[in-house]
Length: 133
Image (cartoon, rainbow, N blue to C red; front, side, top):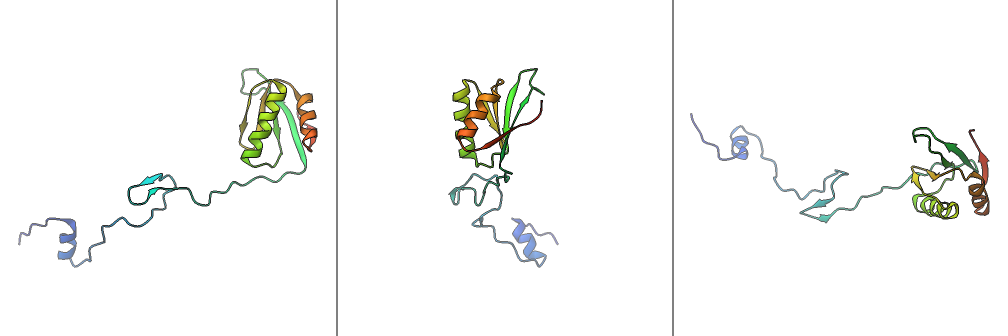
């Protein structure tokens, strides 16, 4: 018996299986999905940032490791969300007159301006500890 099946659903029906519904009206659970032709732009749901709690001290240390000998001052232990951390980093960079960045939950400021950074952080209400060498 030679039957020509025009689609997979015809083959499934011939074997006694119920064909699956081909519509894609369901919302996918893919976190990397940005746009769907069915529903338009997809916004990420429930992505809340977890901030590591602080012990009350802002730790300031100088690092040169992995930077070809150039020193940076790393400030950690602030327990701030992204917006506030970036605003504080901007204020520190302007005060020191140097560059820097926010990496994870730490602020990196180029150069060795630990004393100036300590003054700014104490004005902001943080207790400051120097760590490392």
